[in-house]
Image (cartoon, rainbow over all chains, first blue to last red; front, top):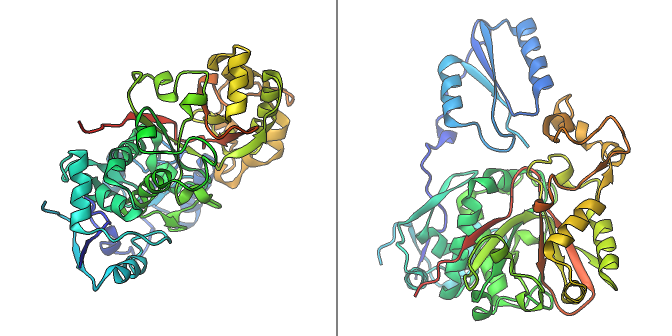
Length: 92
Length: 359
């Protein structure tokens, strides 16, 4: 007998198979931080530590609008365009 | 009917059941093998186009088509007549105010409760009386289950991966009731929420497992007890105020008392909102406001409305931002029990959707 699959296809690309190439170093790179909305003090400290220990070219900090929803695509596109690496707060 | 979904050849039904376990196409309970005939029957009854897209189910983003909903509803053991109810429940979950990405992955223990109203409840024999939150009725069990399978198979929020729900609760298997409209002195929930009398609807609300409390005597006694049960300093609603809602379920005996003493639903909501407040110091004492997730800040600074005066540690904090965030229904048998079901606080708001019953 034949049965139908219950799982869905998705629109987005399968990112598990499309990892960006790894950077050799974060030094001299533009690094992005996306605060989940509850992490101000935490991301402040990360920015300080990056500047102290890693010496990036620049740190760009953003805050995503809702603590338990993914960052809007426009925000992600903006950050990905400007940065070589991004640290993303996922939320709760 | 032509299907888009992948077709799998199996030796027999038993083999299909095992295959679905192996492929993680079910969340731990066996399913009814979804044959083309059964799925077609489901879709034809609802008079919908199998290719119709309702949305994408987070976190995986699986596209929810009528075809996929029908496959999962067959798997759940639904009769075709149940399918319009399942569709309405999925639509409710996809409303942005439900915040499905959040409800699918949060640490909070809530699950989506489906409350059915209107003539369809009796027609489909959806239980609203004795044992309403338990078992014994195909409609309750399988409609609830169908929603869970849709969220599992299209959303792929597996425990820990990436669903961070710490405890969850048994509603994650199936969580569907009908309101006991006959026992209620008030208009049904869906009419209160704006739908026409005589229509049928679902209201989906992300909430904890029901916390029961005994309800005896006069209205004042019943509501005293309700407020004791509702005034929990450690509920997930306390962290975030702006989307916290609560569901109060009154059993038939308490409901009758409201009718006898002439209390409207609004009277009840106002009373419990006024009398279930919690001293601020108790909430602070739980440590939740300065949890690690607050990353050195205080959740109350980030989320609480400014009108709550936290400078006085004895300030009485209401359990929701407004009495309109308290939902009241009647359900259960003729016994002296009622229940409170806490919402989440960051989404999972009660969303009502009319059920599109075919002609």
